Amino acid sequence: MMDRAPSTPFRMVLTVFLTCLISATALTFTYEATRERIAAQEREMERRALTAVLTEGARFERLEDIDLDRAAEVAGDVSVAGVWSAFDANDAFIGYAVRCAPRGYGGPIEMIVGLDRDGKVAGVNIITHDETPGLGTKIITEPWFLQQFIGWEALEIQTAVRGYDTITGATKSADAIRAGVVAVSRIYEELLAEIDSGDGEEQ
Image 1 (cartoon, helix red, strand yellow):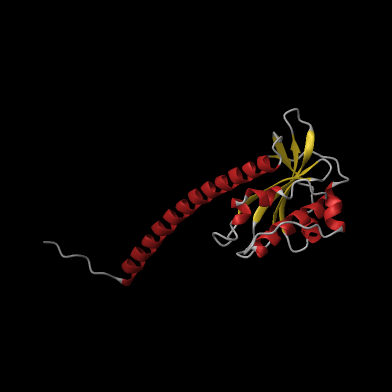
Image 2: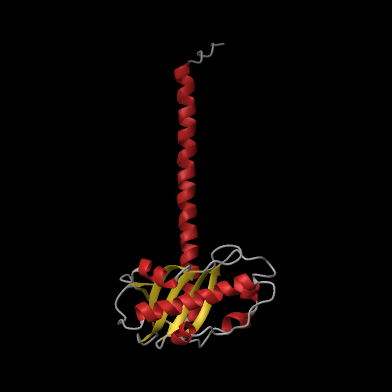
């Protein structure tokens, strides 16, 4: 029976190094695969939200020339992630969609607000949130809540405190949605109302 080669510090270090290298490589491949899958899911959720807020939209183009820092400044405490022009099946411009994230009770609420050609709210869709189950989640489970914002006009929202029906026990969540709608309306008045719809990245 052959004796095993004695372990040496070099051999031990080499073994540990190879083990770490294999583990790191496996984790990298797993991370990349997971990241791509998550990114694809995110794009699909965003696409569905865009078509939900502007139901006649057949094509959406991200406005790359919009200054998101300026948009965030106009929006106040509401972060802004993207702005799209929307076109119908005949390629006619029908409005804008803005992705924003007002802060709710459980953290940022990712949402998209659609505006028609005149700046009126055409739809509101929530993409992700961490609101309290059974209370804050009513911003989604109670259809009337989001529907009440449809038809709001940008100028009206800014010049007066427009009343709206909140949700009992979830005031902070409800106020966050209203803040998002108001922020998008301000962005429309300050950045979108006077521009022509140009080419951008198609969604």
